[in-house]
Image (tube, rainbow, N blue to C red; front, side, top):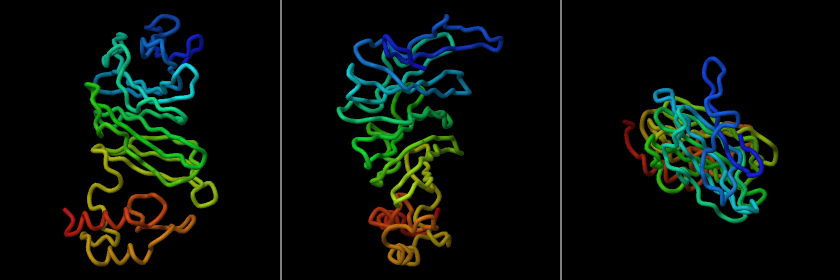
Amino acid sequence: WYGTSPLMARLQWIDSDGNRLMGTSGMTATTETTMVHVNPHACIDPVSGDATVFWVRQNSSQSSSGIQANRITPAGTRLWGATGTQLLPVSSGTSLLDLHAMQVGSLATGSWIKSPSLGSEQVQAAAVHEDGSLAWGFAPVLVSSAPSNKTDMTSCAGEGMLITCWVDDRNGTDQLFTQNVNDDGSLGSTTCAGDIDGNDAVDVTDLLAIISAWGQCPIGGDCPADIDGNGSVDVGDLLMVIANWGSCP
């Protein structure tokens, strides 16, 4: 949770007998006091028992926002330093909404809606190794970039992947969209992306399926040629077919 005066993300450990291990008010996820730290969400590594706390880091006027994370042991040690690890730099005029944390294997993942302006929200995600290093590169993975209003995002863990779900009005009415991020940071199928017809090869029939379905996906309809899940069959799907041309592994 986060408290006020100051606005600070906090964590509490409670043992199986109900005893609070971090005093009556818990501990802070960071020692930084020159910034505002709000909207935390945490996940647990079942192997080590450590918690990874993600939160929104803001300037004092809350007009600029970024994403920060820290890994904290049940003994109260901040494993990624006093202020944690930066996942998204603080930038002006940006709102970060529906932050959610989920453990995916050995990775602690965070996902959120980035809203630079109304109607142009993006869904983003990042993952952190146990040592605090970023798993999917310096920039967050762009889970969805379709220009639309996006709300009510949540996430869960699949087998070797993060799965995000959100409400999206890209087709003129609120619909539920979902996308997966594999543990290597890629989107969609890891087996044979581009094999639209399921014949275990990416070939001419898949290319023709892209051409035939080119354009916006039908509202509420099946759209197998939309390989990257952005709501339309376009250049991104065509490039994925070309990149994976040949027999499936």
